[in-house]
Amino acid sequence: MRAIWKGKKIAESDETVVVESNHYFPVSALDMSFLVPSNTKTNCPWKGVASYYTINVGGELNIDACWYYPEPKEAAKSLCALFENFQFPCFCLLHCWEPPWCSISD
Image 1: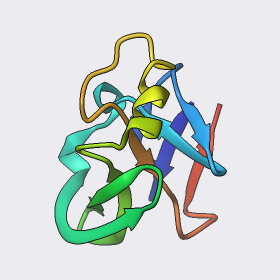
Image 2: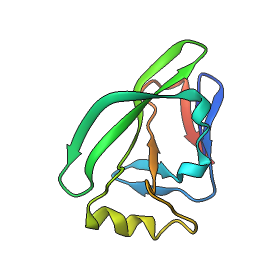
Image 3: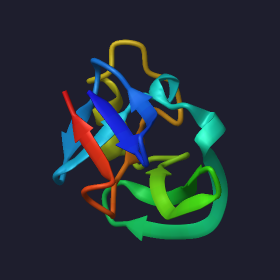
């Protein structure tokens, strides 16, 4: 599975998990050179508090397009077992807000 935005590969892995129609990638699958930490935080009742990254490709920003759960709740920790070689934070989500400029595909 690949996550592409503005023609750049942001993540690629054979190990993704789909939760609530979103693809979660192992941290090792991300190209962190395109990710800028954000101050945004949100709360999910069963996954916990999410922290965000903004994707930056050549100065074009996809605000808060990547998020993860640094301290997932117990229910979300079970998702980590779906990755063969997980680590905490055990997953990271790439969500593309602006089709057709971004895609998640096989």
